[in-house]
Length: 590
Image 1 (cartoon, rainbow, N blue to C red):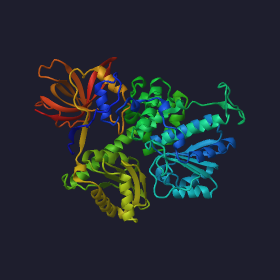
Image 2: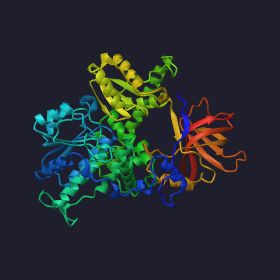
Image 3: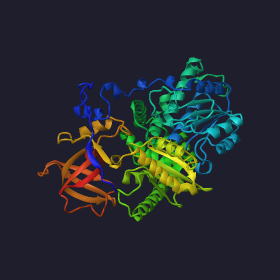
Image 4: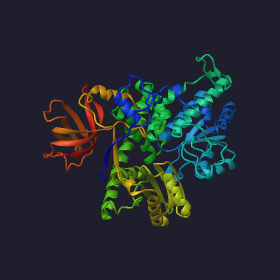
């Protein structure tokens, strides 16, 4: 495993415009993340950019309003991850609240029907006889699927956030902040963020047309002409926060507002019963919830359904209003996540053995690493690629056998290589190698003929070498410097906890420091529990924990002093709060 270099994040405090109430520590942390004023920290909903800048919005609203007034049959075609599940649930709930009476969803098994709005999915959709298909978190690459839908007389509205290719589908409307010519300022919306904006704009349009009753106590019974109460879009911000964090999109200013507002609602108990059930099963307290809990506890349980089974289970969990039934769905998701962990662990062991058998040192490893095993599960290769990427710090694509002479791969990248663009470059130079691909800067998926796998391996490595330099393959951990003894306290930890939300491209603060070891022991079979002190006098003791350590090296009787990279956290034990260091990197000093 490559040992990363420990570097401090650069920051410039000149020209900053913070209030006197903002502690200097926070000013330093924010400046290192490109935020130099209070304006960049505002988290109220009225600071969100206006939906009107979204290209294709007017056409989409025309489609939706016509469908509502004519009570057309609407079918939502979702994706099979947490972003797709939250996008689907939000679409269904919002449309129903606005008066749609014939709206349903499908999220077909991706192993049988492929990704996006494929012709096969259109054939399945035709059984519902929809007048309008709405894709959520997919569709921007669905050229043939849209053609099939249009040939069947079905209108198509695409909502997506993935990067478009050179050709767009001939849909009736496309809403995607990343499509060419779109002037919406935030290009980092998750699929659920795009849906939230679209539904918010539809609500405004219907409000202006007099669709909603002024008396919010009025509810329609069966007649679509009877006006209904105007829905509050904030009621679904818990879904938006979950999908945004779980999809690991950059937390720019817009996404930080959406996530913060969603977290506040969850903390206040204003959340879907399914989300509450998943929180309960993961041992998270909603009052203490932070963005990382959505990404590491809730998201994986929701994603497990799409990886191993049918994401419909996850969507039903999010839609369910009965807490008892929601818990039943959550238990199914929790069990699937346990199965996923076992499968992933086995695959990771196999991959690491394969790497060792190559007898290559770091200099000899391919720059673009491809891995394949005939027994690997299609739904878990993305997680495997991510784990191996973290170990070897280079772009990794893990492949599984999809049958019918085809391999399906999931790619994860490192800073400096836009993985979707790299695949596009390979496809341009070697048109026969890749059947289809799509994705983002850091993650992508692709399919290729099984008999061209080794040709692709060579072409991918060549492309990575063309785009990267040797220095790009040197892993780094960026810290926010050191904390002195007056800052290592629960007040600082609480300040940092409430100063997010932290996430992708707006990382949670990391600190570095040297500590003396007072006690050390293994807990839970592979976690290192430490009692530390800042000085040899060992007057002020600090708890710390490092997860998943090498038990052949720790505990280390010879270790007296260590250099750590850590997060400052609050540990809650038997109702008592205390400061705890969450160790990201540990190095023995003596």
